[in-house]
Image (tube, rainbow, N blue to C red; front, side, top):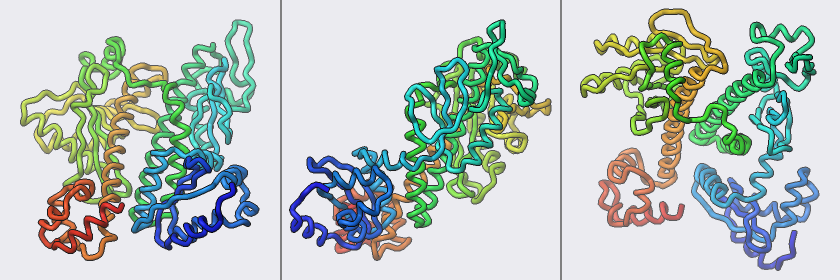
Length: 490
């Protein structure tokens, strides 16, 4: 550790309290090396300056960081929840080198695809070594990852790491020479490079979608753990989410199914494969998002001419019940949406897409029946096999993986999924921000309700003057002064 006046450092450590908070480790020039949270600031920060600390460290990167630490700052807060949120904000703002590197050093397994090769394979790795390759994950459970790869080999007909493809005299490739060729079923074991590339693109699109779904789920679990005050688990999930974001971020420019307007040919293709009278110029899609029934919300996205029409997006909070019932939630929001359109004399879309299968379709159809409305053409798109289900009772449809119509439906469904998850996360983040009042003594449910009725958000409450706070029923002058100081110290 760089030399520093021992007496001044001891004095600074002596001023640390045993309260929760966030600490910032700095080098000789004042640059922030690492941001961390602590349940007990005095105990946690002091460990960094113990002579024996470096000998106990196993990770080389941690040891390297310890050599660079010269000084520290700290911010005391009232609760571990505040510490968790503040730590995340500071990391996002400062982007300290060792926060990123130490998370990456956990070495969760990744799936790597060497996209520049003639026949890209899907292989397992623990280190990102090439910027020219695509990576997916990380996967917390190796068994989950291997099961996913085996399923993809069968579903998309792609090569895994152990494959030995053979070049045929006509320039095409035989992907597998052994019995595994039968796994591809009717997809064919002999392909040219262009045909195989389409399979790889479809498989990567699937894997990226899965990765983003897993990321959203990890974020939800993190917020849920924080709400339950399970702060250590929340911190671990936060680190995992950050590692997943680090993996996904560089790959977005390679997106296989970009959010771009669909040309007329694609719109006509979609209309034909679904049996519509013409191209569906207006498409609406619904998705439900919740965690074990809490924070249950729905999203609706609107696509015009194959392109997102964000002015017509809608978000719904479930009003008719509390709990975990996707079917009832879908029935409620579909009924609310099209009852309103009908009452306002506005047209229905040419195509209604429901995220799910026959159960979700039945619930949506029930909404139209109960409202006495004629439904638009309606389908369900199930995630597992991207299978199209019809409301009119015809057999489900499996579109080819390289079908532009299928890709358009995926774009619409994935956008609805993203929009619903974003709304869910926003509500949960708001709840965590509002929980700051739980740590202020003297504010019960009645005063809390009165404060939010007046100011709506913690941010507006924090910006209010002492006199404005004192105007709220039940908040006197002394409490207003203390609350103002409490909020603005955060």
